[in-house]
Length: 449
Ligand SMILES: *[C@@H]1O[C@H](CO)[C@@H](O)[C@H](O)[C@H]1NC(C)=O
Ligand SMILES: *[C@@H]1O[C@H](CO)[C@@H](O)[C@H](O)[C@H]1NC(C)=O
Ligand SMILES: *[C@@H]1O[C@H](CO)[C@@H](O)[C@H](O)[C@H]1NC(C)=O
Ligand SMILES: *[C@@H]1O[C@H](CO)[C@@H](O)[C@H](O)[C@H]1NC(C)=O
Ligand SMILES: *[C@@H]1O[C@H](CO)[C@@H](O)[C@H](O)[C@H]1NC(C)=O
Ligand SMILES: *[C@@H]1O[C@H](CO)[C@@H](O)[C@H](O)[C@H]1NC(C)=O
Ligand SMILES: *[C@@H]1O[C@H](CO)[C@@H](O)[C@H](O)[C@H]1NC(C)=O
Ligand SMILES: *[C@@H]1O[C@H](CO)[C@@H](O)[C@H](O)[C@H]1NC(C)=O
Ligand SMILES: *[C@@H]1O[C@H](CO)[C@@H](O)[C@H](O)[C@H]1NC(C)=O
Image (cartoon, rainbow, N blue to C red; front, top):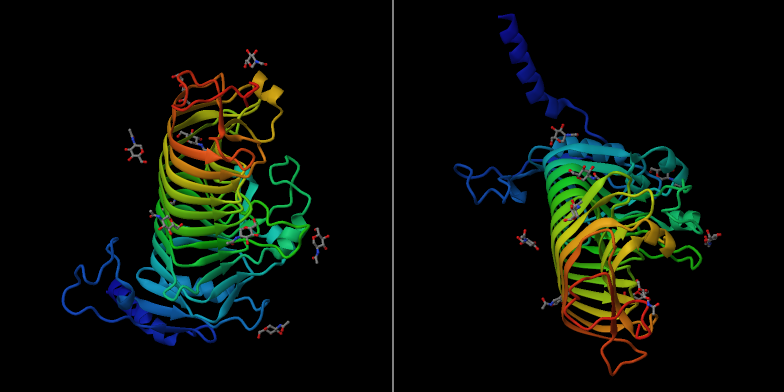
């Protein structure tokens, strides 16, 4: 009897709580449409979740200025929208986030981002308050985790703004991979322990560091994304603003997107498989890179099963690149089954690269302790355009490690020229590849190089 009464009062309490609970100032919850008849596929999306019109909508007040932090309202909204609702941020409004946010509890939630989420640039606060990952000493403002998470803009006006300028100014003169670097900068969007995540139709602006980092995440897609990072300070570039990086990810798709940043455009890192990229435009980047992997001593890393189709690569350091670490204190692993099919390059230093001596390592150190990352079944197909000429007439550099397998590396339908020699095919360098690469190539130390 007592149990029954308790259960009854708990039910009454929860029914009344929505009505009674004080909402944050300016917040509201509006119910979704009730599905007519038994819920069926007309009401449900591919994950079996309610489509947008059948979801309750949670709104919060916008920020009045760049220091008007609404992070606690934002967190409240996600708790209310979780399990079937939508957090809606309206076009023309800015929502300032000034506190770190743990969004690891999500399950069946949408963020309709038609407005702008902007992080404060309080460097002192964020360097003391963030989420930290050992891998390349990464930090972030917030962590997204859980399942069935959809972030989209209905109007195309949605922005995630990392407010990076102060970070670029403060970081100037440093290098992220320097072992003594402690000037950590937050990543703009990070998932950890997430599955079934779709992000579409938004702009990701001025991330202080990498733009996207996906960790322990499966089945994630990005469609119709614009990534931009620009600095108004010529002596403080937006460094390390990579488009996408991954760690322990299975199933990632990036389609129909534009990236205008100063580091890797798309760059899966250790333990990434089932990668699909199509219709990607990259400007001013370090290319579409598999890796780097094999960085940490004793650790096995792999990248496997990637399909990269129709990339436009402008003003880049590299086009299609594979990179692995070498030296005395590094790891091992493999890169296997990677296809680049269709890449147009313009003003790019090295359109095609296999680098088994990453990063900035003295060649003598790599020769003494070569990379132990096997590289197999790689196809570079239909890659055409003009290099920058920075490497003279060389357009491709494939330098394998003598201590690892390097097998079935093929170039097909390559038409790459250099402005220093525009009437002839550019030179392909290749070292340590037993059966060649399917097109004429010369040793990197030959006089033809
Ligand atoms: C920013 O907006 C908040 C909330 O309206 C207000 O309290 C604060 O004074 C404003 N700050 C500035 C610098 O305008
Ligand atoms: C990962 O998320 C699931 C729920 O989606 C949770 O049950 C599990 O504890 C999480 N694992 C870790 C290591 O955080
Ligand atoms: C530009 O960046 C440099 C290097 O950090 C810094 O010294 C300078 O103050 C910055 N300029 C502006 C206008 O912020
Ligand atoms: C390649 O991608 C570009 C966008 O980057 C797009 O405009 C073009 O239509 C795509 N080409 C094909 C053949 O799909
Ligand atoms: C491409 O990037 C360069 C800088 O690397 C910039 O000057 C140019 O405006 C960009 N082009 C486009 C179309 O954004
Ligand atoms: C990659 O996966 C291997 C094998 O499962 C594991 O031993 C290794 O720690 C992972 N690497 C990273 C960087 O997590
Ligand atoms: C190689 O990767 C592709 C995806 O690009 C995948 O469809 C194919 O099954 C993989 N091949 C093998 C042998 O796993
Ligand atoms: C690299 O290939 C060699 C020779 O097949 C093999 O013994 C080794 O286990 C491979 N390494 C990895 C990490 O798969
Ligand atoms: C080029 O390097 C190979 C070993 O990698 C060496 O055997 C050969 O003598 C070198 N050739 C020249 C011209 O230095």
